[in-house]
Length: 351
Image 1 (tube, rainbow, N blue to C red):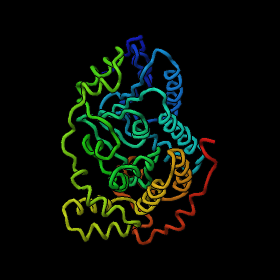
Image 2 (tube, rainbow, N blue to C red):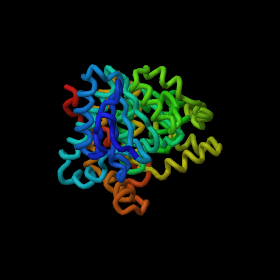
Image 3 (spheres, rainbow, N blue to C red):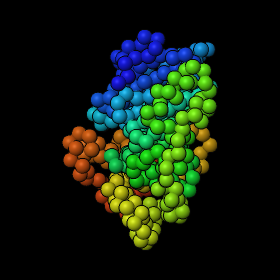
Image 4 (cartoon, helix red, strand yellow):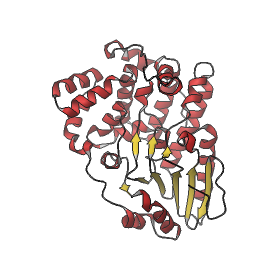
């Protein structure tokens, strides 16, 4: 258990902050919710990032999480509860979260995200845009949003679209949970450090060792990557421009991996699959993370006006029956033109 920082910061509150020598520390402390982010946490992190970055004693900043997750996502229950009746409240949460994601990408000091345990959704947004993304043998990384009628956000479309050989398309569309080796293979993490070595890693950086030198000392081989082994198949199929074509190619392939992938996709919201593929294709052509975050923010408003997000969260989080009824239920019935038209441009979050 995390009991506090060396400057005397007690282990209370949902975000613990302190300085240990040359290392600034941000520790997410909401383990009963797998450190899922609420608006207060987003605001706390954003304010402390500025304070730590401006502190001349701090040479690097580390983000860690209490318990078995770095961060499992954002405040989905709040958005589910307010999205229909007070959509501006839900959009306000996303706006502040997305600005924080972009802020991390522009840090002038090393940002170490320790993805030890579960790192999904909002946790990915706090991690993949930083300079040093660290996984462990406990890492379970995912962007599972297509399973709740949503899409990979927090700049996920930017990061996933830049993975080699369309591995990010596979990750974003299937929502599958992957481990350390696959996360590194997809370019979403930089190094694997055994979980037991994290305290020594952070202590060395706090004592003045450079981040890169410390990682060289404590990193370990991540082992084989299934995604790397299947990269040619993934690249061939997930470069197909439409989701129905992807389904057809998976059926025709005949391999066990293709069959497993198809089974994963068949449980997802058809609307989310169409929307996610569109956003990933647009992200491939984008020139900045901020452009993708603005596009995701516009898509948020469209999602709040639809059906599948509320049904997906109900089935996964509220009633937990794991039996969502998607509308429409078939890919062929999703009107992509109308869906894309509903993503109305909004004022930039970064203007």
